Image (tube, rainbow, N blue to C red; front, side):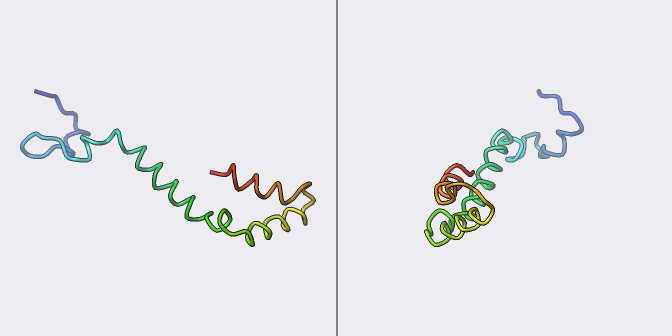
Length: 81
C-alpha cells in the first residue's frame, strides 16, 4: 500500500485510487506548451500568411533604419516562435 502525504491526499478518491489529474500529471508541461504555442501561432498568423502585413512590417523596420528591411521582416517572422 502506498503512503500518502497530506499534499497527495487531496488528489486521492475515497477508495484510495488517484484522480485522473494525478495519474497524468507528467503531461502537464506538454499541455501548457501546446496551449501557448497555439496562442502564439494564432496571434502571428496574419504576419505569416499576408504579404501586405509583411510589407507593413518592412516599412516599420525601414523607418527605424534597419538595413534590408524586407529581408529582415521575412527573417524575423520565419524565426519567431
